[in-house]
Image 1 (cartoon, rainbow, N blue to C red):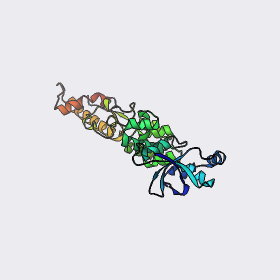
Image 2: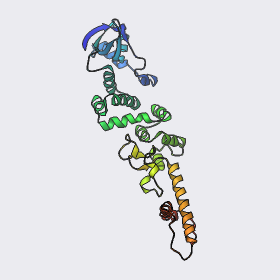
Image 3: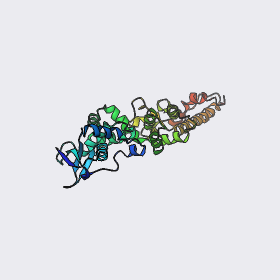
Image 4: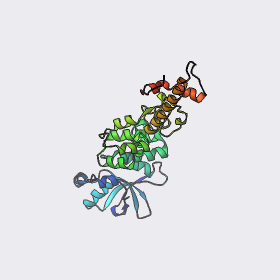
Length: 287
């Protein structure tokens, strides 16, 4: 790493840098330009050599643009070398984490990349946040594209986006399908889709490793990481099938007059135990 003053035209920018800010009209340099006109360049940019005549810009795009508007021909820069411990990805993430107006989804992308590369503990140090914060922020990337677009256009609040990111893609799609019916109430929508597997009347063996079982998702918040099914349609279908079977067995056993109830098999014994659940649904029984 070394400090130098380089030709401003030798700095090559990445067009993807701060793309979301530019698209939303948040990329403003008026105040920075006025500051440079009054006090000059106070903070160096950070670059890395591409060849003998060009440098890749890692941090300081607004400074470069403001300096050009002020008709500067050179720029103060910190030049990273290949053997520096601080690589260009880390520099970019640190720079972005300090930026005002960074959208949470952009931050989520930066944090997720840092977690994938260095682990959540290093990412937490890089971004000056807790490991829990980093995990939850990175989880925003699991939003389906429609909800991401709504979030970027301010049609979805941060807390709602965080809540939606906690559930699987299939659940998000069902919520989106009934978005108007839920009156845009994300908490209500999720609650309507959650089913407690610990209280299920049917055999939940095949639910243990199901992707809709929240206990299998290590990225969920702890308060949602319970034995909960997020596929209400499947849950209710299994429940209704179990209750129907229980009713049929109950009627069959009651038709044998003057005898004790007969347990036909282990499976039917299990179904017979659900008869109280069936009764709670006010079915007609043959007494």
